Length: 230
Length: 230
DNA sequence: CGCGCGCTTGACTAACTTCAAAGATGGTGG
DNA sequence: CCACCATCTTTGAAGTTAGTCAAGCGCGCG
Image 1 (cartoon, each protein chain N blue to C red):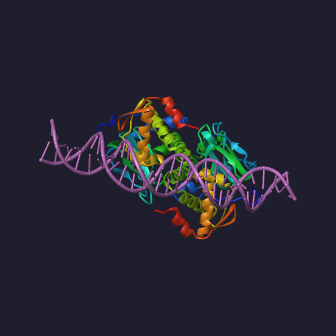
Image 2: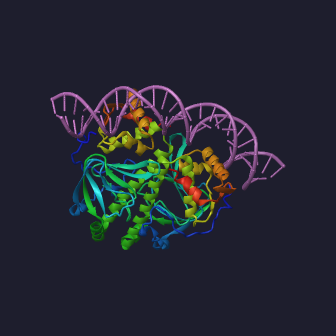
C-alpha cells in the first residue's frame, strides 16, 4: 500500500465536528503535552487491543489510525478513523473497548492515565475540556448511528467523503489512506459496494479518482445532495 | 396503546450496561436530586427537540422515554430508550442534538444546567461521576454501531431483547412499552421485519408473546446464541 | 520482472423492504 | 358496559438493495 504517499506531515488541527461545536471541544488539551512521550507505530501495528487494560491514551501526531470492535464471523466495525490532532482512548474506562491500529505509519503522543489524573486534579478546568472532547465523540457516534441505521449505501459514502474533506481542512482533494475494506467496515457495507460507489460517483462526475486513495471532490453541492437524498 | 398497563412504578435502578462497568458510572448522581423539580409528560409529548437550546437535563423517574434524530424522507433513528433511573441529555453541549419524547406517560426529575454547573464547581468529584455516565453512554453507542453496521436482523432483535431484560432487572418477563415501529427505528429495520422476527422467535420457542408488549424470554441461552450467531 | 495484495467489475443470490390487506387491541363515547 | 373506530400488529407476495461469489486488472514491492 502507498503508505509513503499519504500525507505524513504533522497537522495540529483539532477534529472539526460540524454537528458538535461545543466551545469546550475547541479548547485544546495542550496542557497535557508536557507529560506525554512520542511513540511510533508502523502500518497495521496495534496500539492496544479490545479487552486490554487501559493504561494510557494518545493523540495522533501524524498518520492515520483506526479504532474498531469485532464480532463473530470475522465481522468488524471501525467506529472511527483518527487523524492528526485527534485523541484516542480518552473516553475509556479501565478496560479498552476497542482495538486501535495504525492505518498508515503513524506517530502519536502517549499520555499515562496516572499522570493525566494528577494533572486534572490540579487543574479542574481541564476536566471540563475533557468532557467537551468526549461529548463531541458521542455526538459523532450518534451521527454514525443514523448513518448506519437509516442511510442508503450511496448516502453513506457521500457523507463519509464530505466528512473526511471537512476534517482534512476542507480542501477538495482528499487522501484516503485506509483500504476499501476499512471504509466498508466503517460504513457498514462491503468492499465491493464501496468500490462500485466510487466508480459510480466518478461516472456521475461528482468525484475524480486521481488514484485509489486520492479523491478530488468535483462537486460539493451534488455530493451534499447525494448525502441527504430525501 | 397500553400506556396504563406498562410498569409505572418508580424504579430507581441505574442503567446497567454490560459492556461498560466503569466504577464511576455506578456512582449515582444523587447529590443532584436536591436541586431538581419533578415534571410529568404524557405519551408522545416532547421534552425537548433537536436543535433547541439545552437548558436542563433530566432523570427518568417512571415511564419510558425515547431519544432520536431525524433524516430526510421521514427516516428516524432512535439512539436509545431511557428507563427509570436513566439520565437524559447529560451529554449535551449547548444545543440539543436529539429530540426526546415520552414513549409512555412518564415522570422525570428536571435539573437546570446552571444549578448543576454550580454544584459541580463546588464538588469536583461530581464531575468525575458525570464523566463516567457519559463514558458508559459512549460505550453503548459503540455497541449500537456494531449492531447497526454488522448484525443481521435476527441478531439485532435478540440483542435488543437481552439488553432490555438486563435493564429491567434481569427478569424473564420484559415489558416493551414502545411500538414495533419504535423498535424498528432503534434497530435500523422496518416494522414488518421486527414483527416477523417476533413471530419467528416465538415459533422457535425462544420467546413467548403474552401480549404485543409483554415478552417472556423462554430460553436465554438460545437467545444469546441468536444474538451472537457467528 | 514477476508476485501478491488490493481494487474493480460482472452475474447471481439473499436479506430485507415495500406494498397491500386482514386481524388484534385498546380507547372513546354512547 | 358495550360497540365502534383508530391505531398498531401481523402476515403474504412482490420488489429492491446490497451481499456473495468469481474472475480479471493494476499497482507497488521485493
